Image 1 (cartoon, helix red, strand yellow):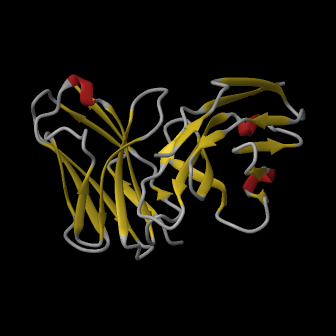
Image 2: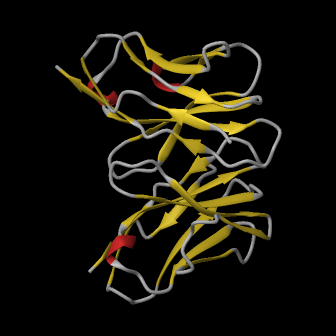
Length: 114
Length: 112
């Protein structure tokens, strides 16, 4: 079975600073990887996804992530954050080519301050 | 815009009083999911429909049921809500499994 680890439960950062949210996964087979963002009292919005192909994936709102198979990681990055990026971020994994379910990490709270 | 719609956004019910949450989609996706999300936790999958086939998670309590009368609509029924069922309930859809899931805005359930 697959699993996801988000080591940082909270990440405080100043506005306009760069940020990296870490995600590591565990699976013995090929995976699909996703980052979702959740604003307070909202559903989950897809930021970006890796299914295959280029390991550098660009998403919405200036976010990008890099799939690293050897390190089993899929870290999310943004070069300059804005106050409006304050939210909960979830990394998720599912097994490629099967009817497996989406497994979520425990989430990282990104807190952007002035 | 194609989307996933959940009604109501906020639902208050009494302990033990049955409640139904609804989800509709205009994406024409085959798969519809229901998740429960408690405060500061990740979403937890309750069950999903692949077309008309119902797939229950092993640890979903019997108190939770679901119906999918057609492609567009899916309902979550909680037969006898307890205080521990207060949570955000998220509906999601995907074209197939495993493919990208698209989420609705959620329904926040309060049990008094």
